[in-house]
Length: 369
Ligand code: ADP
Image (cartoon, rainbow, N blue to C red; front, side, top):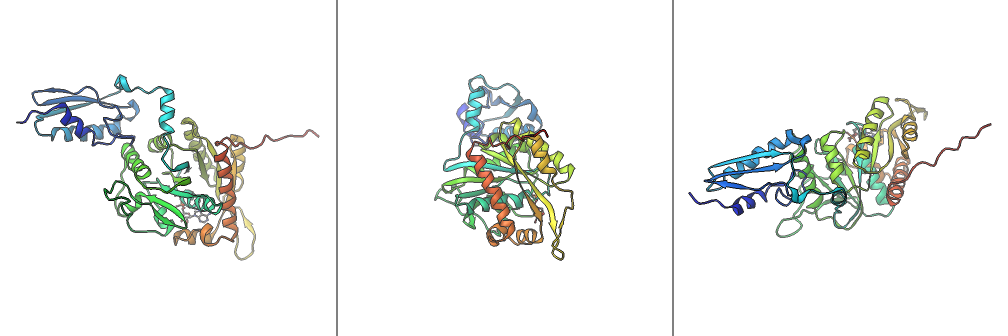
């Protein structure tokens, strides 16, 4: 049997992505001292105690990969909550890490919702197109790994091409003058997507960092719905300039929206504002405005929470039909009232981004009579 060396093991570990998708296990400083005794290899991977469950999958995979190296008779890989001392980042280093920009992309804005089905993706694409209409260079990253709908909303299919001969980066897809990358381009539609936290992160980090984006003023990230671990990690580890929360007027959705808000606050990402979607319905026949879910809940909630209210989008057949046909209203009906609403929301989003996400509604002045 050949003698296995530490270098053999390190070179295999270097091919395994770190769970947060930033580099590999070795470059992320997650691997402890490696001990080799008569073909038995032992080391530990450090992990955040909160993520032990998902890390167990990684641990088992690493163990298998190391055991397959010629000269290794047994691999014992443990998880430890302790980080190797040399790489413990302080709060400043952590902030710097989060801020690690994607070259060529000035701002990244997440569009999120506390739960699915509130029209997050529809809002995301139309905000992106609204920003484009303002003359900005715009890209969209579909991070909704559980149900990537951006290819359909953009009316795009096919596979991204390699951007260079080595095939290291992919060219983004493009339509309406907006670049798009989605996990939906890379996996068949009927593939079950059982993504666990770490896998979600590495897939997304790859999409974000291994796409040859053009120079971009603002990238819109369509987040996976909800406020679970995967979303939190994503919010924490993408260099976000801010987040937009989409909510329907129902109370329940607002409770969810509040969770979304808290999630971003927890990781110090400025919340740029709330959009109320499916806010009201204008009847084709009588032209009357019907407030099906009640109305104004999001505006009041935004005020209460001290967050900018970005606008309200009606429930409208055109919005849905065109979305489903891959002809988003903001691009295909630019003179319509919906495009105007989305452009207005986009303008407020951009203003908030440019002000560092610190936009707050002006304090209300209450006059005593
Ligand atoms: P999410 O991303 O929150 O799951 P989607 O954007 O996929 O939601 O929207 C869910 C469904 O609602 C889609 O069929 C979409 O066309 C429709 N929809 C979204 N917003 C509106 C709207 N303002 N008016 C009419 N239909 C809408």
